[in-house]
Length: 297
Image (cartoon, rainbow, N blue to C red; front, side, top):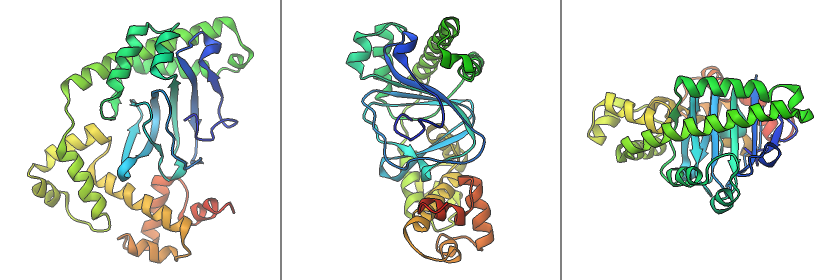
């Protein structure tokens, strides 16, 4: 988030200003409509925590992988982990994010969170990235924190408000750490999901039935759906659709191909259907996306 050109659009805060010196920056963002942002890759020195309150956000990861995080879920990006918002567009959502200092500095300068707790979360962050579902306590704390960060007085440096924000960040971190620890201790990374991702990437322009894909992987369709949702945050069909839209965005931005030709090439039955699906995932029409990507919007 720190490198995604959100400064000036949404308030960004320094952890040091809230006596949370283990945190470099944090913020709360709310997009009521699709918002274009940088499509450059981000890679932070420290871990990055993202908690989605409502809506959804979808990131592109290395090897053409996608990760969707919907409302009521969070994700922890490890240090030096390359990621970027898919298609360079945030769809409507509300989320809180916090970028931590590198582990050694965060542990050494810890003031809000016990040093041993930060070290433990850094160890968990090195495991594969997947969405974590909130419990009721975390959801309440997240709602309260987002409300506090939306208060205009926070920009005036109100000491009482700052203390409340500090307390809520601490509560969120501890709640998320507990859920992350429980989740990672009971779930192993599934090769079935990775192989399914590869098949969907290789054959994204084909409408091969998920039943067929699951048989090729040697598992039941229901089991594939369950694993895929747990580890990637979406169903296999949704994943394939997002891959198509991502490829379409590249063609709209980099070529002069007619929108109808792009739709047909990506396996859509008509340009009208393609436009409806495109707007659902990106928030704007293919024509508007092409204009924006070329600096003409």
